[in-house]
Image (cartoon, rainbow, N blue to C red; front, side, top):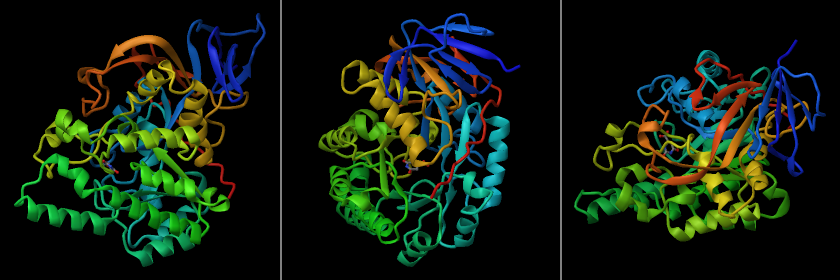
Length: 451
Ligand code: DOR
């Protein structure tokens, strides 16, 4: 008989709102909400004073496995997720080898089966020459085994740039899976770099990263991608918005087109801006680059208004030694899976938004966008992926406590109130009382294709 766990006493964040009720897990499934006293259970968890949320679904992580495992691997990345309340992740294709064939996808899924503590899914990456693979990935059995196609319409870590208009037109016209894109216009970036190099006599500083990858680069590329999605009537997701103008572009879309395009924001673009280069140096270097405080405020407003649908980390670990190289040899990217939920819980504690909104942006929203079956809600029949949080717990983010293999955080030294205290994946505890599981409890995420 399946193990039955009763979580009682918590304030549970349900789709219809917060309620003080109990939740019964049976095996890997939520068997009931509001279970009467006296039900037969194997384990009872007293969660009085805590809040129970669906496990967070992070749709943008870079776990570097295979090939770049000195930075992170599926075990360390997924353990960091478990401690951070993230019970499912979708991982990006810029590994070595790149995930650009269904064979590479299968190999990554097999690695995750052996290593991942939380649930996993992997994008298939576009190249200038893999249209056949992208088409194959859109058919059974692959269509339900990958969230979609990732296109770097702007170069970043790894050589995955797809900038050619003809290739992009073909991908948007012929493939069938949802598409997600990194948007920074390569022509603008190169011209900015050349101009700055000439002006600075070849000597660039990390602050120049935001001048090279400037707001025009982000907007031009986002506009181009949105135009492709609308003309080809394709489901399209904009990764990591960084400027006010991109939010305005989304707001300006007429209704039927707006339904095709979804968007996300990341904690680094919400909490950090160009002024942080002084303090953080290349630790604040990422793509898209940090912009201004006004952009940060516009992203927050975009979230509140619904123009931005979800939050994601873009967890992109590099070692401190790599980050310590002088700009521009230093790589772009910051880790975030452990601090993602605490950063947002801290905002909830300060009254900026509610836990119901947080769940919409971090759990329900990603499940809806990527058509993930049975996840993102606390509801009977859904998977028992849950996170219990203590809204009064105060802790400081410390580099030496990070589980990510890279061992640092741009939020080192930041004191946050509101932390996960226990996480369940498929009904199994993967984090609790400071202990993080090491066994591969994660399951392959199933994508319920409806379109
Ligand atoms: O800063 C970034 N780093 N942005 C990306 O899009 C990729 C990532 C990485 O893989 O390092």
